[in-house]
Length: 321
Image (cartoon, rainbow, N blue to C red):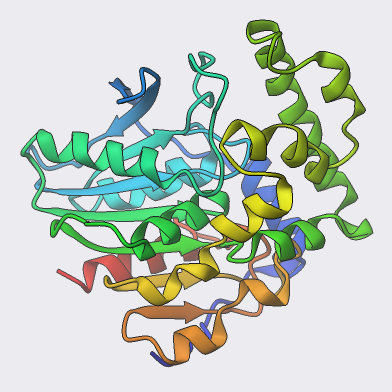
């Protein structure tokens, strides 16, 4: 597919990557009706909480599944904004809280990671069991976008009801993205992620003292340290390098058999050059890669209530019907 330059021009200060990233993540307010929460029991005895919001139609047969990013949840403005635009156009939305990301700590020592596509597969299987939706689309943000692309490109069966997907600000190369985040210009972001993840791990240490100790967590001074200590080993990988190499979306993009749009800004300071799969997109029948000059990380701010990435995601999915 041809590469898409994109025609997104943000207002004023939002040409600055940091301004758009920070505003969209922390200051934006999105009003939607209160979610309806459903707890899904997983095959290994753990659970995932889904948060549902519904279209203005009485009964919709179309659903979008939303996947949040690192240290996120369904309360984030980018999740609510995407749910809102789909709801207003006749789609129901199911926003997935990854393990340990809703209000209650999950039951197992493991939680979530960028390649946890088996959890997504179980959620989709549950949704299909409702026998309600004939058209299903998916939208993943950042880490959730990596998980989504991995799921779509793996050598596994995928339901015919899935018509397509969109990934926003996808770190297709996890090692490269980590290197980008660790640059000095991103010090505040990386420390914020680190502190958030440490708080989650401290709670996990209280529940699983035989698996991890607080002194080990306190000794971590970077995101890679956390991935070496916990993320990799808790999920069956040898170390952080093994985890990055085996779960990066770039390794699965060639296998995608559904129409997919990846929307990543060129000024996204969280992404390395390896995160933009130019050559794969050029030679793929299914992968569309759009790279606007602006947008930061999930920060495609507009003067409207719906942001550029929300309009593009809906337009792309709607075009597949």
